[in-house]
Length: 250
Ligand code: SF4
Image 1 (tube, rainbow, N blue to C red):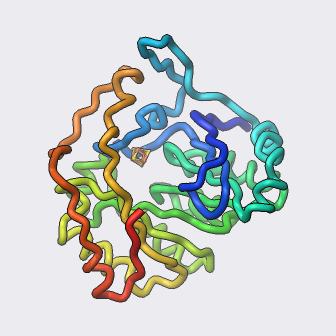
Image 2 (cartoon, rainbow, N blue to C red):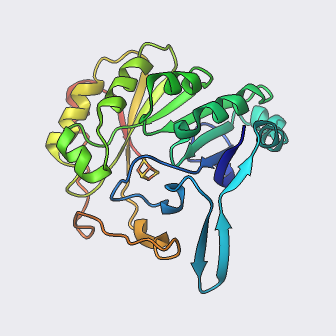
């Protein structure tokens, strides 16, 4: 068995508690209009071209090769209450590979950073081996979700309910996209969806990445957001506060 990774970032402090190494798995079934990692979408290696030259992104590992690499820092992770985060792309697209890597890790804290778009069995295969889950919720309205991500949100909402029964702590993360996800209607719908769910630690509202389009040309892709990037993001946590959901801006 092999898995494909497009980046491994060490000493990350934004992808979970403590000092972490984040593994970015290549391949994602979604096509978010605002995706700032276009090289993470294709499940195949690809060439990035820039004035500085060309480089291939996407490296294949066996589970033992990747676990060996990650285990080198296990003592540092444990000393700093850090660990390893599996992100992407969508790590659940390679669920069996990620689960196999986790099985070989040397007693380190593991975070799954996911869109939740997967079969229930793939979701449980990985989430059940993790200490914490970062779970993205983008849009509750089905038509808008299809329009902006290219996919239905039914599997995402289903796996969120599954997660809430698994006794694994999780944080719901909402990327604030101007005029798309930051609307009162959407934030109120997300607040109603997560309110009262067992195991929810809090909701994180993520800032819009204004450099989202930066890597598209290098990947030979076109950045064509279906929204006005220049519009200020609406920063209003009241929909969550009114329902007693703990919320923070990142
Ligand atoms: S889920 Fe994440 S990686 Fe996948 S397209 Fe959306 S923003 Fe990009």
